[in-house]
Image 1: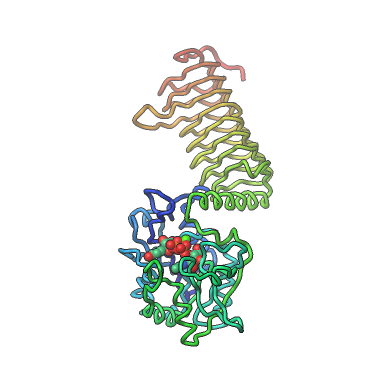
Image 2: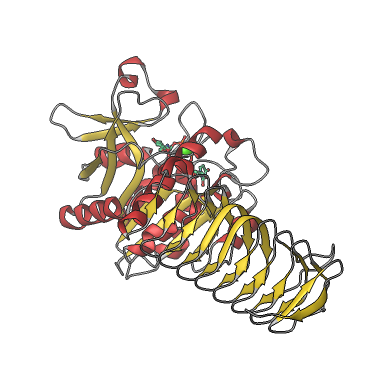
Length: 420
Ligand code: UD1
Ligand code: CA
């Protein structure tokens, strides 16, 4: 893939989202829209990625590492955006093909990207286009072919006349161009359309008129090329990714009891024989070991690690914490910034008060501790090995519970040596 550079167009505001943040930064299953395409490109070995930014570029740049940036100050159209990369690409002799896609189509799969590149490499055409057939093609550019099936032109919805509007073959919005043909065609584009924009899609007509061969690859699954233009599209994409995530987790031996009502972010790791019950939320970066039961109605937030054989029950929220193996946190608890050892029992309604209104503090609960129902642990605090807190205890900050001791009361005081 060293001879290929990829361009992602993401300078637009995404007006139809009606948002104060750029469209490509909205999240799908915990990950910004634009990052999907970048990750997919990298997964098939494309390293040379240029992102065209404009609207609130600083925000977009913060979300992506390891790509190159080009600024399009004014959104004059997709062709103008692509032309902005010329200074990087024309001088680079190693690059002979350019893959162009739109930052708002995150669901294209690695297989589709590979197909279009492979086809382009073998056919050596000026452009290889990704197309699909839709019974309702509204909103997409239509692909016009001649009588002998040669691609002649793409016409945008707004500019299409009635007989073009009924064409069911649409422009998905991914192209693999011969670099030379691309920049030659881009220079010739004029904003001769209803929106007065420079359309990338006009490269096709220009190349066809120059008798440059144009090839296409088609895909069947409309989910793959869903372009996110509105909030409704965003939620539709969320549902697709959620199903993809559940499927891939289940293929690794995890049971997701009700995938439609379970919300697992994109980069969560869960090991085999763990069961996730409905209405559970698991955020990005969470890692869960084998043989665990999670939920129903559990919320595992960022940077939480759960070891093997752990049970986390209903209405439990855990954030930035480590839960050791064979530990139970079964009913209505909040655990924040806490390291919990092995074989610990966290009683119903336990709260770790990790925030004093200004800062957050850590709590440590060591192996075999038993936290009685309704305990409040005010951080920073440590509960030693095998120690017990009585039901309703309030363990105040820095009043560490020594190993093996029992505390109770408000504030909690040491009662006697535990026999556990
Ligand atoms: C585009 C295609 C259409 C295709 C559809 C697939 C064109 C002219 N039309 O239409 O044929 O069927 O995608 O989803 O290309 N952008 C810039 N700079 C600009 C304008 C747009 O970077 O000046 C970026 C936007 O941020 C966006 C992407 O290009 O990520 C696509 O732009 P958008 O306006 O959404 O194009 P569509 O109307 O969806
Ligand atoms: Ca779009």
